[in-house]
Image 1: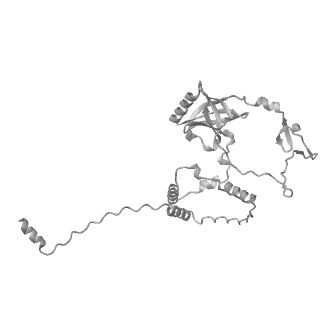
Image 2: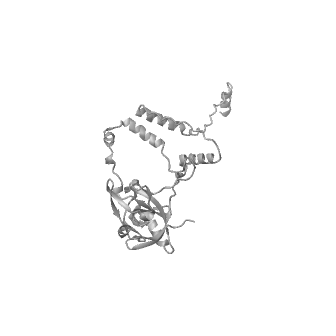
Image 3: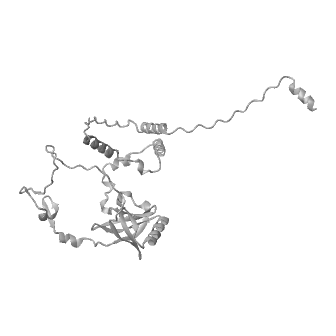
Length: 293
């Protein structure tokens, strides 16, 4: 059973919706420890004063901010505590915006919100109203003693809260020197048409379950094999693919490959052929004509 990591209320206008916060993601990674290659023992990290080569006890360590090389401003814990945002139990929605206006680059971590006892009706009302309006709530919340910008949006039958980066934490692409070469480059209309056709050929509904971290799976298989005593032969690395000699040729080859992989359409049902009328013996038609007359 999921356990809430935070409880409080969504506040917009004079309306409060009591909610609980649950993690919505579980990033997976293979973590390694540092070991001694000679003894196999796990390495311990020590905090050492380089001027004395002596280990420094944790209680003697202070925080310092480097303002110039090897020059620091020491900040006391109580000084930081005085600046901490108040640990309020409220998700303060300041405004509602269109989802399309938010660049995904601002998103950070995602959570699910569920109503607490007695809050189901207000929760449902907010969920339905946001879904109908197509809006996303932008506000602030304090999590783990840190104030966060956040986005509140409906996802199916629940509300999700996604912490966001502040505006000055997202770097502008204008700092890239390569922008000039992008501006100067221009594709022909034929290349653009081919690229659009390739995109259309590769278009599909997004199904996240069909994507897997293949590298992590191979690492786990390697660990399991070595743990069972198997000898592993290291395979040579594959050579880097050569750059396409021509953009148009690469587009045409890509389209041909996609089309060759596409399932062939089912053959159309054959229509029954009409039989030609049987030829009558000579004189048979004349005899019938006389009989009718």
